[in-house]
Image (cartoon, rainbow, N blue to C red):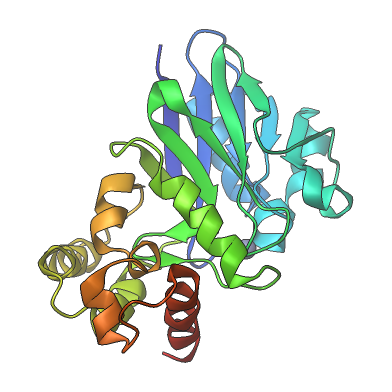
Length: 255
Ligand code: ZN
Ligand code: FE
């Protein structure tokens, strides 16, 4: 039975995600951007929180852990690589570990780059991955802790998930990301079409998350470091993909 996924805005541009295993009623929040907003959604749905799945240690992802644990006595699962920085952590996990939410199964992948311990949760049977601040629609997380080589390898893991996989990114950054993407990949028809569609959706206040692996492969410049047109636009034809990725990320930081 598929997971139920409830997505709602938190803080200024985060998304909250409550996920429920229909068979057992187990409920997790992916990260804890805003405990009040999360509690309000739980109340509205009539759900009881059993788990917190953290992706990384930033305050807008783990800052609400203790308030929620106090109220619900839920189990906190989070990244092994930054265990000391995850408040209330009960279980530290990393690459290849399996996390169960009732009968629903997620596989954990390490995706260092934005932070060194960042992890994502892939529910293969549901075609859903909770990717935190590793990948965004047409963008990727800033490299606060990791190297371009680490982030390129992390993004490549996401690009290698099945094409239909839905990617639940933690922020609504899509419109700004599209503007940047067009600046480095202006001849990409799929990107131009998507950018127009995103403008239309945002004008109506519609979320552009989740995205999919297929959409990101065709439009996200941070996954396209091996693409000839993107390399040419950067003046880097034939360059190593890690260098192309690094240059793309540098340009985005200044955009
Ligand atoms: Zn972050
Ligand atoms: Fe964040």
